[in-house]
Amino acid sequence: MTYELQLRYPQDAPERLEALFSYLNDWHEYEHNAEAHAIELTLSEEIVDSELHILQKHFPWVDVQQFVSIN
Image (cartoon, rainbow, N blue to C red; front, side, top):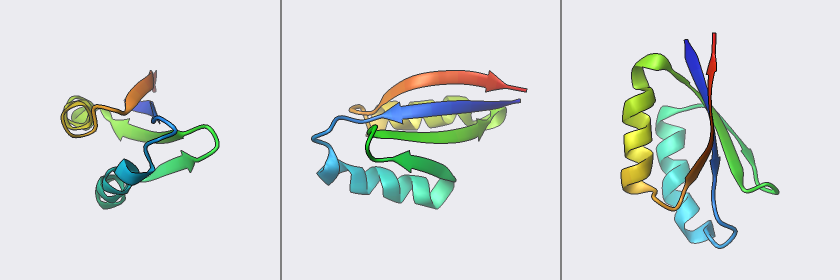
């Protein structure tokens, strides 16, 4: 099973986005929609909990908008 997450970030976040994109570039494939201030990524079931923990701990200004299970 995989999970799709949509991460939303505030419009005033550009200076903080560099760290987020650095992390994502190292570990994930993702799609970035700059106009919507959103990033979409797909995660395997095995890493969902740890990724949510990392996002909450290191990027608290990122809001997880969608958490959808895909079979």
